[in-house]
Amino acid sequence: MSENFESALTYSSYLAVDDLLKLQKPLSEGPEHDEMLFIIIHQTYELWFKQLIHEFLQAQRVLESGDTHYVLSILGRIRTIMKVCVAQIDILETMTPLQFNAFRGYLSSSSGFQSAQFRMVEAILGRRDSKMAGHLPPAVQEEIKVITSRNSIWDSFLDYLGTRGYSLPKEVISRDKSIGYQSNNDVQDVLLTVHQKDPEAAMVAERLVDIDEGIQEWRYRHVKMVERTIGHKMGTGGSSGVEYLASTLFNPVFKDLWEIRSRF
Image (tube, rainbow, N blue to C red; front, side, top):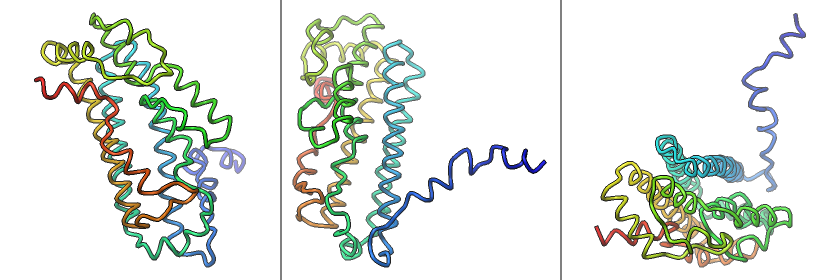
């Protein structure tokens, strides 16, 4: 009887709670009270990045199959996860600059700039440049190279439009996917037609705008949080801190969807 009890699946064993709670290992002496918050927030971000990758890859498969209703659900979930990521900054901002600097030195060369999963999210969204993974381990660089060689979420959306009978420029659809997408007037003309005559596809496009806005919101909140915590000091790991983060602001992912706004 005791054997059956011990082998039964429980909440704790299913979620590996015991292992999970051993992953928070502060390095500061004491340790400093706020280091635990810092660790848990960033570990939670990594879990959400893992889920975002999971959802984006499914969204791509569903877009390319032409399943409108399912993809609306997935894209809505992605946007909701991003809202949670933004809300976590509110928690992190309860830590004052003095509290952060009490353990910052222990972070040594580690930096959020080294988050491989966030680079993967960026790659799925369409970022294509040699700088994005050069500082990461070779195995991770190879994984990101594979992602950047195939469809981004935007390319999958264009394929979705193709399943609905829209004719898109051949040079866009058949281009080398390892090269970043550039705004295209012909694609924008198609998008205007979609908004005017195809409410279902237009809803999918607007979900992408929601996600794009969410990414920009996260970037803005992130840069302001860093600025209020360390000002314009160098970031850990040798990054330029606020200067680098600020350079990523107001850079939409799905540019064509923003550029058509003035043409409605």
